Length: 308
Image (cartoon, rainbow, N blue to C red; front, side, top):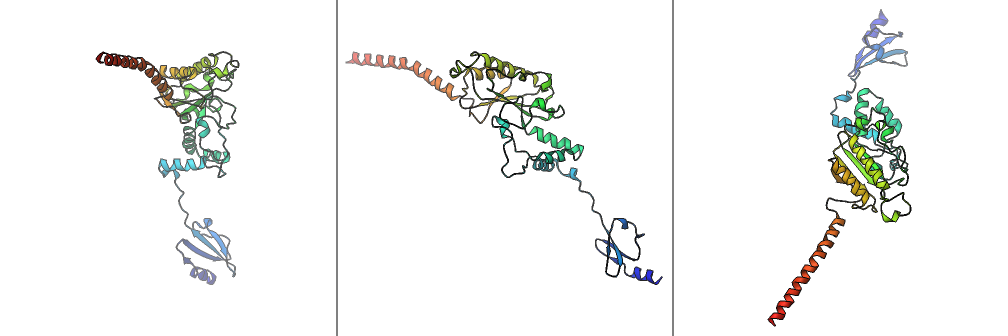
């Protein structure tokens, strides 16, 4: 009884919880003591600190904008300060944000079902995915390689034309396996042209003058037909590509026939008011005005002679 009374006298209350000291006992009958931390002093007296447990952090109570910012940091923060370009070097898809290590992205996607849905939508909606592959060592999968679960999240797709202009790959076909009919949130199709084989410089190397132009035009027509919610088509290309060339003329004609809005990409610097067309218009107008000026000069000279 004396030892029990002495133990009760040594009970002290602290701000973070209750401190209970028990002499010679392994277990305590104090409620919640199993969650505490046992400590032993020099005299062999065992003490149990019962700490208040903090409630868990409710991540989904944060606004959606802050959650998306956190997802973006996890998904698009590379391990190196100067990340290696893994998206290729051609077209708008090569300018996608650098990716975080795959282990970080997978860990985020597997955290919970709701985090998976929100993070995957952010990831796939902010990237530009290619419809067909080209040989520029891009690690980002093409549309056909993606799971059908993630294709509806995509907002922007890209078609790169000009490679393999003598023999286009057989896989460059629009069919059900490509999954365009399920991509209901795609609003923008970006078309990047590496070269125009109908240019005279390709004479003697191409199959025929209109071979690749017909192939590319038919391919774009089928793509526009199968994307259910497409709004606009953005054209861009390398400096050697002429806007008034046969290939560009065919592609623009297909976009206008499908009723899509036409935009111009930053690489080539095209605008609605084409400089090439402006130059040809000025040349034609100058040629038209020259006889008129000559006629006016001649009549003026005739009048002067009459006066003299």
